[in-house]
Amino acid sequence: MPTSAADGDTSRPMLSVANIETYYGPILAIRGVSFTVPRGEFVTILGANGAGKSTILKTITGLVDLQKGTVHFEGTPIHNRNPDAVARMGISLVPEGREVFPFLSVLDNLKMGAYTRRDPDGVAADIEQVFEYFPSLRKASRRAAMSLSGGEQQMLAIGRALMARPRMMLLDEPSLGLSPRLVGEIFSILTRINAERGVTLLVVEQNASIALKSARIGHVLEMGRIVMSDTTEALMQKEDVKEFYLGLKDSGVRGTRRWKRRKTWR
Ligand code: ATP
Image 1 (cartoon, rainbow, N blue to C red):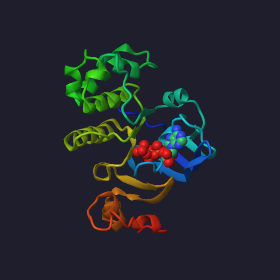
Image 2: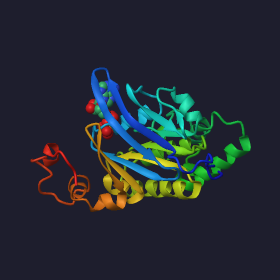
Image 3: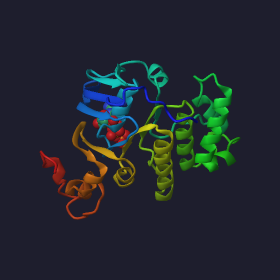
């Protein structure tokens, strides 16, 4: 799998999300969210249940339409395009809950990820690369995806997204439902994919601990708004992040929900 090529202009962000608002019927899920993802970066968006993390990824990939704002990928507007067109531009989504094809084998799931490609040798080499990242998938290559464990299905979903040779991958809570050991394994492979392949990563997570350790830039999302943005190193030092996302201060988290009353974050 070759390293992703830059499109020439290294000064502008790879992805720019500007002031987006997305509704589900009358419900405003995303309230004027803006952020950028520089090329080659590993960026995370942290947020609790219902904060709007999935909606941001669905808006970027065209699965839901935005009502306000813009999304640009490598300078090209992509808001409200259809998901297939967005995928063909080089953005792969690994959806929440994995969503592999349950009745297809592991191998066929990977081949499905390469459906737009016409280079069988390249596809074969990339399958080999996915098996190198995730050796348990090689052992299970002929098995139906539904027979895999949750961790293996997450690996398969990531592998399938890689088969499209994306320049950017969006991942929706890859840690969901997995043991701490598997979460660690999956994030260490994500770190390799970013460092070795140059694939730009945007990962939305509730698991702040692993996301802050793995990514370099982070945003905190509360009720559809970004309330904090910084390097992950700096975010980890902030009292509110320690208290509410890393659970380092038990007292005060339950019961008072002080963050709900706060207007500003430190
Ligand atoms: P989770 O971790 O639970 O998936 P999230 O941060 O990804 O949370 P979203 O799924 O983006 O949050 O949801 C943001 C808000 O939009 C929530 O209030 C949610 O209830 C609402 N919402 C999400 N999907 C729909 C839908 N299909 N119809 C109506 N409201 C929705």
